[in-house]
Image (cartoon, rainbow, N blue to C red):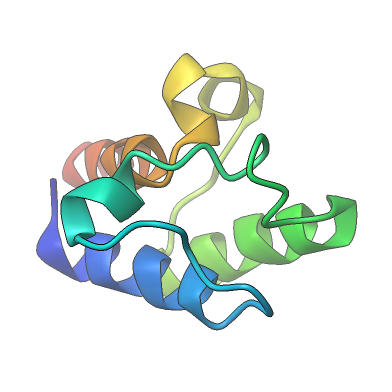
Length: 86
């Protein structure tokens, strides 16, 4: 997993009102941000657009239906994979 991607995604979630639950980076990467209520529907759109613009990738239906998409670390893996396959 790309460290830049991981750091960027963690910062995105930490900037939200309630931050990310978890004491360590490992804990934070395991958080299911949908179950934890960290984002509403507009936040999800903002997250996807921000990722696409920042990393010059496209998150399509395949990536958003990937079971990893709902966890912070899984999302970082998906973005890293897309960057590696450009």
